[in-house]
Image (spheres, rainbow, N blue to C red):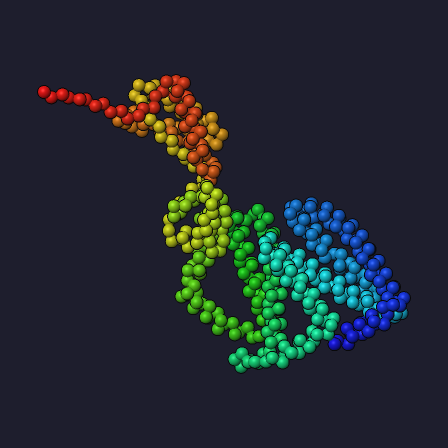
Length: 426
């Protein structure tokens, strides 16, 4: 067992029924009370300042982190200061044990706060939080009981070679933990930069998405290199891995690589943006998300289609809102030859202008298409700005108003009629 930990347990066993233990318990209680008061005051102050500069959601997230981490950190500060002062007068084993417990609690809450800041809410996030908490408490328990050093020595004794390099199991575990920690820090830093970039109005939406993805990839690559160097591995060995990865991308992963490259091309050339209305592969809808590998298209019936980015590079795509979000709606109708043609055209235009979704500029127009077999063929063109909402409901409302207007003004909509002549032969 670690000599320091052994001394702590000896002092606790010796002082558990003495006045020294009472003083230490009192100090811990007072430190918790003072920390609670300071936590409440600072929380109110920070909440006011944060809400002035950030959206409400970010303010809640910042206050949540303060609530979780400030209390154990403040308590730890007072307990640690008291331990330094009392160490010259009496045993402080309880205070030393409390410092370690408070430090573990603060570490758990800070890590969980950072995890919630990096990853979106999900069931996996809750599981990850529980795993982090259990790992920290188990490591602390092993440290306090003295088993951690024995486990470390046992892992260090398990040695083997990777090529010509001797390694042991403890080194591998340290490397994994170092990689995870550096990746975690890299994701946290990239998320900070991403949030600032996404609020920047000087850059287009596509450019912001591209920069966010490049920043995340850059930070993750740097984190892996730093982690490998920290555990003593030669990063020049990654050249072999890079060559193998290049071959894999060239053969087995060419479709995946093509989708990723296509995604960056789409984002950079601005041929498609979030909110555009497009038609591709018999799918019509609104672009709701652009990812590195795929695009999410929300159709008018509420369903979402996940389409690989390569599709938009190798095939034709109709972008209904590429340069102008206005869309033309065509409405054919036929009237009888006996009806008043000019009146029918005016009634059609009036029915269209009564709809709020129909634009006044350009204004609706009506054309005579042809003199058909059963009546006069007319076509009305009108324009809308929210084509992502569809046009079926709009057409139905306009047709219904036209129907009522035609009935009131004796405008007849013809239908095919056939005359049959019976000829008798004697």
